[in-house]
Amino acid sequence: MGGKVSCTLGEVKQRADFIVYWGGNPAECHPRHFTKYTLMQKSKFLPRGRKDRTMVLVDIRETKSAKASDIFLQVRPGKDFELITILRALIKDQNVSDEAIADTGLTREVLDDLVQRMKSAKFGCMFFGMGLSMTRGKHMNSAALLTLAAEMNAFTKFVAMPMRGHGNVTGADVMMRWQTGYPFGITFNRGYPRYNPGEFSTVDVLVRGDCDAAFIIGADPGGTMPQPAIDHLKRIPTIVLDPHVTHTSKLARVHITTAPQGIAAPGTAYRMDEVPLPLKPPLKSPYPTDEYVVRRINEAIMAKPFWLPDGSQPQMLTAQV
Amino acid sequence: MSLQVIDNATCTFCGCVCDDIQLHYDETRIHKANKACVLGTAWFLNHTVEHKYPDALIDGKKASLDDAIELAATLLHEADMPLVYGMSNTTCEAQKECAALADQLGGLLDSHTSL
Image (cartoon, rainbow over the protein chains, first blue to last red):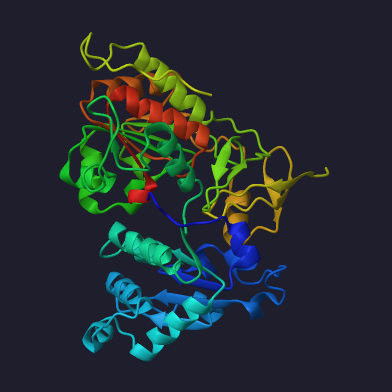
């Protein structure tokens, strides 16, 4: 997601007077997001806290987060991209037909009011969840929302930030960007990293049956992926590293139990705004850490002949600390 | 027995990664997670140091860690197009090792982002 206009949650806490949650349910999935960062905190710039902030929720149904919002916009399922595109046109005073607006399930009055509020905000922030990024349109929806945030900067300060789910998934993006130059969906099959979501992203690779072995760490695709993908994981040798015996472990050739991060394994985790935080594990696990096991596997593979014939090997990067 | 306390511990359940949790713990488990939300409390209190699962499983049968590592390396090395996937519930240090793994295998590397 190059070119993302973003900020840290500290800035949101101090300055954001206009908050949009799009396709997410923070009240149930990120319970402390409101109180720690977006709504309840008072600051030098927002001395009255919640009263100085406006919160808009865009979702396909009225979730628990709707109770916390000032404005709830119920968009018709699958029409997020259309709604973002209409907003991008409206902020530039371009003509939008009544049919196009009616198609999203909202009215012109509501959208005009929203645009007016967005433009008059001092610091706007849009958080988007899986309801936007994992439904019809997928990463094109995220790209559209990031573009809307960028274009809003012609009028006022505006940023966008994804609401990340599981623990250190932000860290995975950051690590891969650092090591390969790309955030996800990478292949090394020519000896150097290439990036193409849709071709090299896991769910597509598995559904097409492209890969002939899988190494799964800190995830449970056996519980979350579509059935054809799970069927392929059953067909090929799958190796799982997890603190628990998961759905995926049950269909895997090899399962290795590891220490849970932050509880018994030390290390670093990234917050959703890409701020790295150290972990402080209180317990000592009888199991090894992920880092130790993956390093051991790396060393075992290094002892075997390289997959390309001699003379055609790319120069390997030596391990950096 | 009195409990030990860690201030400003980091919770890695969700993407908020709250770093202000106060943990009260002894040798076997965490008893209290102050300031954590319902999800974070469940995350901290449900993990113990018990040896609940076998160290490793090969084809569903108990195995030693060394055997499992050796077999994993062999299977990945034999594959033409191995996939390295996940990396959400793990540390950055382990993620970096995963990037190195995909690199030396000439395989695919992807995270939970593209669910």
